Length: 364
Ligand code: 13P
Ligand code: SF4
Image (tube, rainbow, N blue to C red; front, side, top):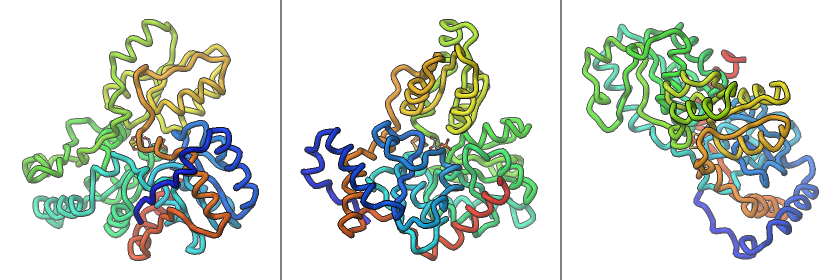
């Protein structure tokens, strides 16, 4: 479905009027409608979220309200797709702005992955088992590919468990689309970066020799997150100089050197837990999306909390969920009109569900 332009009356509304009308619409919809919000959403959206979480929690809790008919998902497209796959057919999932995608998820498509898979089969032969693992930040048809080929989905919360499981099923892992989460996970499991090659989908054999592919334990897709790529070792050193005793925590989508230079790394949920559970007076430099870091700082006034990169902007695609879109979608439901539904075709759902269920079982 294509994005319908937002009617001008929604664009012209003041923030206060928008907020009030969202509250009224939610009240009118009652239990039938659940609003879910990823931690990276702006405060004006989180204020209306019935549930908030990282991508693992939101997938796990997709059916948290079994009476819901509609889930309005404030996050990005792949998360709404996962929710659609994990909920019964009668539940409709709406994404307030269909243009809210994820630039990392767009770095791998089904044609490229199928091509890679064929090339690997040719080079490695049938005696070598490669297990595909896709980060949840990927299109539903890639999750289906993984489900169909004996692999699993992972999130930043459970990547080590998922990848360790994959390595029990076969000799090698093909990890897409985020090379950094793949590399950080491999290192965390005790592998050396020299056992990993990067697959560039725009080069023959991904830019590798057949020997390098045969020797590698991990084949990492050449994808990255443009938000997390901004964090650097220099920023960490500067934070440590300016705030002696500070703790540095980053998301595992950051580069390996950054993860190594930090004190801790983890998903957004893990970052929140570490900061919230630290004693009053603690100092934290955080390497993740700014909406989350600013909210953490606001909700924990007894601690010093700041983003490692002072110049960073919000994740551009998450930011596309503006309150006006949320209002437009909710008022549509009040009027009986379903706007911006994300509906994964049943053919794709079948194997994508296999991969997501495998993750939820293996990593429970
Ligand atoms: P989480 O797994 O922490 O939700 O992160 C998702 C994401 O898109 C990070 O950029
Ligand atoms: Fe995608 Fe990065 Fe935004 Fe997460 S922060 S949704 S990985 S672009």
